[in-house]
Image (cartoon, rainbow, N blue to C red; front, side):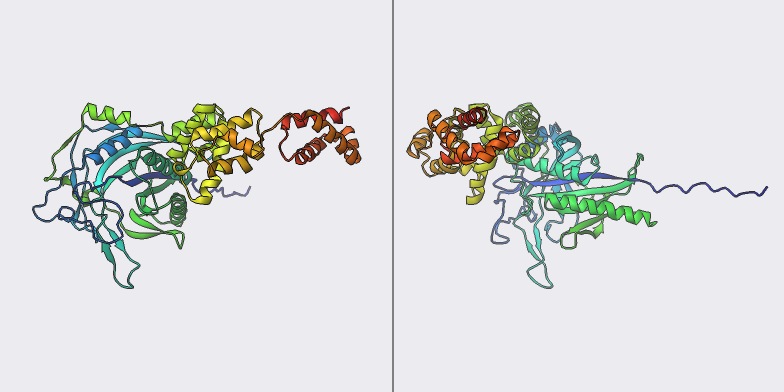
Length: 492
């Protein structure tokens, strides 16, 4: 016998699993900065709102903006966080050209909010949950402007010292789609609460993503890479997807991922190295000596709880799962609080979610988009729009006439009642039984072939005759009455 050398099969390459955590910076919607009295917000003229406090001149003492504390607590409660009732601020030391003090006032050991969780809807109608590690208050840096000179960078310090909260999640996400949905939900919440306008294009909400990979089934995470300052939901998804693919290719080529900070290059659609990733030791945190510790009372927390409205995830569940509205309609209805509030007001009046959603997401939104208006600038109040819905439901006007004629007329004359305008426009439906029957007799004579085919079993031709009859009466006949007459005549 000839000995045959046995070979064990080569192990199959691992299937990789991404591990993703988020750090979301939210610029707080306050009139003044977090530790100084100059105005916050965007200014046309650079370096206009800067003070000795923001620049940390010797002897200049900061003081905490109470409204920043309130907004941070509000966001913490909305994300099911615990509140540190005794907390203090710290100096986070690092050099950056648009950080004039050489340190940032932030929080370290006692973040104002901690151990929360956030549930959010996904594109397929399911939901996911991410734990919130902490939410802390800090000040923003200035802005470096790189496109004004071929070889120099300009610095605008208007933003330096503006109040931020940083929302730090646990590494609970596993896909880029989940990460995008989580950022979208946080953006909705800050807008619902009035914490921030959440505008990512202007930098009022910025996302950093920490991404690593590990073989499926592993419990030990890989080396994480931070992607800084991603400024849109779509870029969050694309940047994370690219970074996951980059790390997999890098590791499968026999290399090791290094801990670093990268940036997302929109033009090239890839992440690029920025610098080595700093650690907490690099920042040399120590308690801020010029700020007293902060105490948040039970009464403060209760007052903040009372300010929290129904949040977008809660409304999504009700719209999609309770009312049965389609996923895309439910998501569109929760995106903006004022739009959702308008929908809620309609529901209070008519209890017809589908009809209300159709009007808001159809004709009303088309009008708003055409004229670049928000829903709070719409001339018709919910009660006025509801009168149109009631006229349709009571059979006094057709949906087509309401959409094409009555709604535009009401927008032009919002002080005039819907019923009065419908009369003026001759849109009200009256019973036309005898006229409909006579007209249907004429149609049967005019279309003998179609009549014969219907009677031989081609039932889809019913719609043909209904359309012909409605066209003859210019949409002013009752659709139910039209259908009844057509069926009766065709079966006689």
